[in-house]
Amino acid sequence: MYKIGIDVGGTNTDAILLDNNNQLIHSVKSPTSLDIKTGIETSLRNLLQDLAIDKSQISHAMLGTTQCTNAIVERKKLAKVGVIRLGYPATASVLPYTAWPQDMVDNLSGNYALVHGGYEYDGQVLSQLDEDEIRLLLEGWRQQVESIAVVGVFSSIKNDQELKVRDIIQQVYGEEFPISCSSLIGSVGLIERENATILNAALCKVIETTTQGFVHALQAEGISNVEVYLCQNDGTLMSIDYAKQFPILTIACGPTNSIRGASYLSQIKNTMVLDVGGTTSDIGVLQDGFPRESSVAVEVGDIRTNFRMPDIISVGLGGGSIVRVNDGKITVGPDSVGYKISQEALVFGGDTLTATDIAVRLGLADVGDRRLVAHLDEAFAKEVQNVMASLLEHAIDKMKTSSEDVQLVLVGGGGVIVPETLRGVANIIKNEHGSVANAIGASIAQISGQYEQIYIYAKEPREESLKDAQHKAVKQAVLAGALEETIELVEVEETPLAYHPENATRLKVKVVGKMA
Image 1 (cartoon, rainbow, N blue to C red):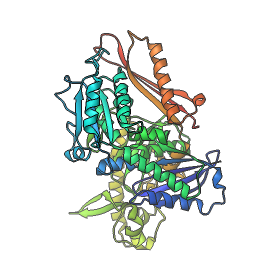
Image 2: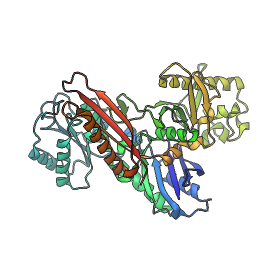
Image 3: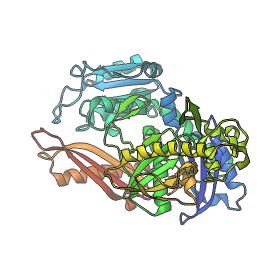
Image 4: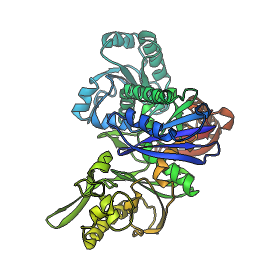
C-alpha cells in the first residue's frame, strides 16, 4: 500500500509517495499554478509517471492547501453569510462585524440579526429562544445568504440553543445548507468567537471547490479507490466531510505540516523548526512532536479571531526574495519572485537578484548556472547574507522561552539561503529530504479531535467534566476519520476562570488516533 502527500505552497506544490512503512519512495516539486488545481495535477503526474507501481495500491491521499487563507486575504470566492446572534437585547451595544475591514463586510453581504437567546456566564438563561422569530428571519433571508453563522452568548458553557437554531435552519433551508455554530469553532470571548465563526461560514464554497478539485485530479491519474484527507493546522488530518464543516481549520496548515515533517525526519519531538520556502520563512516550536499552539488571539486577514492556531512567526524571506540596494542600504524581501523564480532569478537567466542567487554565489547552493552570478562581488554577497541572517535571528529570538541557544531543524526548499551558523542557535540539523518536509508532514499525520468548554466544577465534578470533554473530543476525532479503538488522550488544558463563584474552568481536551 502507498500514500500520497501534497502540499500547496505559495511558490511550489510538493508531492511525495510513501510506502506502508512511511519510507519515502519519490518526491517532486512543481511551480504552484494560479488556479492551484493545475499545479496539483502537474505534481501528481510528475510524481507517478516514472514509477512502475500499481495505482490501485494507493490507499490514502492527503492535501495541505493555502486556498482558505488566500480566499480571506484576497477577499475572493467567499460565500454570502448571514449572522444570527443569540443575545438580544444584552449585546446590542457591540454589533456583528464591528472593527471588520469594510471590503470584507461587503463581500460577505453584511447580513446579521440579533435575536432572543443566550446564557449568562454561570449557565443561567439570558433570554428564551424564540423559534418563530428565527423562522421569520430565515424567510426574509431566503436567496440572500449562502451560509449561516450561529453565535450564542456564552455558548461555550451551554450550546443547546445554537444546536436548536441549526436544526431550524436545516428544516427551512434543507439538510445540505452550510451552517457554522460558534461553540464548535472558537474559544471564550464573544466577538472573537463570532468572527471565527463568520469566517468559517464564508469558506464553504472555497473548501467545496478545493476538495472536488483534489478528488478530480486523483481520478484523472487513475487513482479512484482512495481515502482522501485534508490537513488541519494542529498537525493532524481530517476527512473531506469534516473539512467541509470546519474549513477554517486548514488555515496555517502549511507551516504546521513542515513542523510535523521536520519532527519525523529528525526523529526529534521537542525543538525549534525553521521552514524556508520561496516567499516566506516560518518559525515554529515542536512540543512532543506537535506544533506549539498560540495562546493569544490571532488576526486572519485583519480580522481578530480566537480559534485554534499554531504559534508561528513568518518572515518575508525565502529563496525568491528580491535583493535591493537603496542609498547604500541592502534590503532582502519581503516581496518575492515566488513561483517565477525559475524564469526571473539571475542563475536561471533572469534579471532579478534574489536570495538564491546570493546562496549560489557563496557556494551554499548548486542550482542554475553559477557563471551567471560570478560577476557579483563576494564581499557584497556576504553583506546580503548578514542581512538575511539578522532577519532570521531576530525572529528566532522572538520564539524563544529562555535566553539559551536553541537547537534548530532546518527544512524547506529555500533552506539553501540559510547561513551555516546563526546567533542564538546551538546547532542546525538538516535532512536530505528536508525540502519536502511539508508533504511528508501531511502524509504521516494522525487524525485528531479537540473539544473545549467551560465546566462549573461546583455543579459537575472535575472527573466527570474530564470524562465528558474527552468523550466529546473522541466523537470529533471519529467524525474527522479516526479509528475509535486507536484514539488516545494527548493533551488536557485547564484554565480556572478568575472571580467565578462556583469554580468555573475552561477545559480543553485533545485526542489523536490512526486514520480509518
